[in-house]
Image (tube, one colour):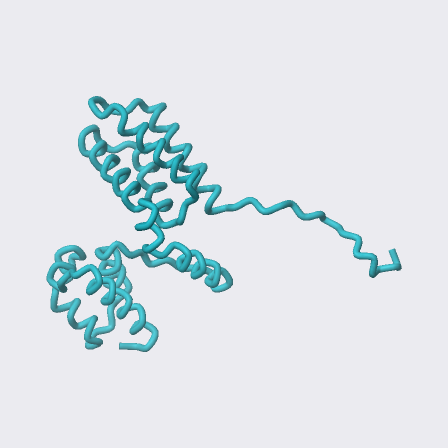
Length: 192
């Protein structure tokens, strides 16, 4: 196994062990054979990119390319959103409830673009440590969806919920910086 891929394979293997998933169960989830996974984990076989991605996704991990200059920022976000924060304030329970609700509605009434968007925004937001006001906002939209489950939620309600979650996601993903003046006078330049 090449040095560059060793660390990636160890991360995937560590996640598999952490979740107490056998190689056989991972094989069933990923579509690879158990022997193939064993050879990859023991270093006897260099995984192809598609095999590695299949293993990672079966463990609910995603492979993402990040520009090198943004890597410190991404690592900082990942460190600040460690799972122990979510367990303390009930955030993980809230998002699990929302995801179950969306899955149930998709199963009962079929998928829609709005439900797909809501699911996407919930997946993003559950990875971020939210303020109490942001958690209250997410709670409100989940309650809106839960309110009347006897019939499919009206399209305007779904669009509104998706819009609220999209706004929250955008505010977190793209924070607004204070405007800076185009020019400043620092007094050190007497030529002007």
